[in-house]
Amino acid sequence: MMTPETMWKERRSAFWNEAILYLRLMGNSGFMFSVYVAFLLGAYYYSVLLRELSPEFPSALVTAAVLTFYLTRSPIRTFVKPADLVFLLPMEQRLDPFFQKAIHYSFMVQGAVLLFVLFLLSPFYFDRIDPRTGMFALTVIVAFAVKYWNVTGKWNELHLQHRQPRYLSLSLRTAANFLFFWLLFRHASFYLLLALAIILLLIYVLIWKPVQREHPLKWERLLEAEAAQSAAFYRMANMFTDVPQLKNRIKPRRLLSGIVRIPFRRTSVFSVYYYKTFVRSGDFFGVFMRLLIVGAALLWVLPAGWMRIVVFLLLLYMSGLQLFTMWKIRTGGNWEALYPVSFKDRKRSFLRIVVALLLLQALVYEGSLILGGEGMRSLISFALGIAFVFWFAGVHLNKKIEKET
Image (tube, rainbow, N blue to C red):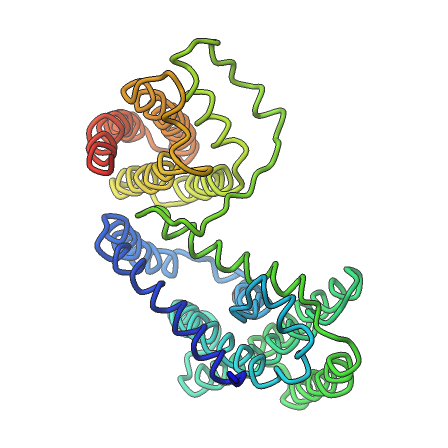
């Protein structure tokens, strides 16, 4: 009989064997080049920000808020499957080693992300909070300890049936994370920080541990959490290749669905389909809107200069890659071949939707540049953006579609 430890190793290995294949495709794509360019631009503007930031800027508060986000968000990766609800539920008491490994694995993966975030924050920390290396090292150690506390807190929440106690626990973790690091960055008394650390330990020992002993694990929520984490990875991989495991989240959004009126013609079948897919899909619409809002805000606050044009085009490119994944959507088999619509018309409908969305994005970015004080360069950016949109859809995506067909 397979032991819990063996089952954990097999499931973890199966996931990473599959993930490595997708990561290779992502590494060989142009998207990673755009991420690299974005990283270089971010590093440049980071140094500009540090030089121009006002001395009155609430550095401790902002840094504590950023850390609080990454500390509080502590999903547990268990690799459970729907069939486990039937076959493993009766054996829950014997699965402690399996779930302990899940907790430790989740802590290590999220610890790597936390370390990267601390690395990015380090120039800001040394410039605005404390120039001493020893204090930063202490902050890193404390952050990892608090991260483990949050991971165990998340595991505790998976044992709670009702929303109210779960939200109460989440609110408690958020407030404790922020208060602890805000006081640490404000150089509060050592004894005050020690008292808070003891309180966190008591919460773990006196509240969370008894809850885990007295309340069984809520497997339905465990499966939902696992499915959400898998979907997040598959959505990212789907930008580069077909991912059969991906299931799109559909939302009605009746108001948005009715805004655009597409003529009722045979050749408009796929125009309606791709527009409805974009609007109703939580993945495409959500990512597009986030890029639209964050990109507009970024272009508005960046210092005036030619680098804004690079950021402008880079944001359009990233949105275009994300929209391309709509072409590869399948709802089961090659059902699109049943429609009396030619492949040429289907491709034309898709590219028109992509062009319309990217032009809308370019228009919003242009308004952001004008509000940010750009003059002639904003017009140059817009002209280059329009040219890029038609090149991206008419040449780049057209070739990708022909290659994958």
